[in-house]
Length: 321
Image 1 (cartoon, rainbow, N blue to C red):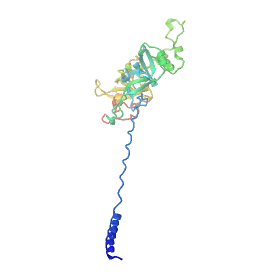
Image 2: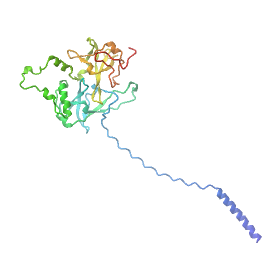
Image 3: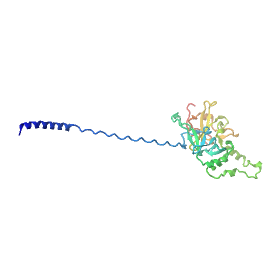
Image 4: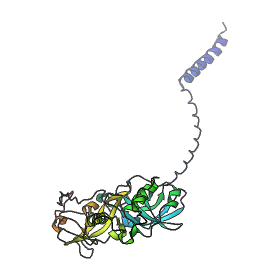
């Protein structure tokens, strides 16, 4: 072999082997990550249609605050306004409304769906839910029934018979009260309106419904005729469309320092002249009750009077009394 040729080949082989070893030790190049496609922005959901809520709020509403509220139909057109509320011992509440087309009529409160005002739920949370506030009502009954309802001269003219006719009308039933209320044409004028005994007439007067505007401000007396306070308002359970209780104030002077209590209407009796109400409890008994705030009406009354006229154990007491 040619020594000169071999001396030229060996250095080249060594260099080649060293280059291969170095290349084997180098890490493989990291592949460039692919940029993920930008996701399409989600389309905004269509705003929900605002409808009247029939769910029962956490607290009842003040009856005096419901008068004057407008009533709309399903298309949000104003069709009437609330003139007054009529309450019965049974708890039924009927709204006396003034139609835009004219005339006062009665409609069951249950046919008026309340649209509630937005409330600050965090305000005075320790006192309980805030008294419900209604912005307006929506009539949920038949528009034809509303147009054909019996017109009344005033809220004071509403009695048990007219309320029965009202409920039968909006329930789609033939009125049985109309026949009972109609007197025979051949009945002597002096005898009309005097049928029945005096006791029966007195019983009917005792069960005559109350107009809220007239009920508020009525004096409340104890069994001995001593003043206990007066009717401040009525609490209306909007979820059921019924009266929750009557709110009475007591113990204060000219509205200062008084306490508010709730009592069922059927525990209040009219006085003989029909102008005032009596409640079979004493002032000292009322002092044992803590009472509540008009802006935080409880759902149930705090004053419970038994059938014998005794004050039952109060739900809460005021240790400072």
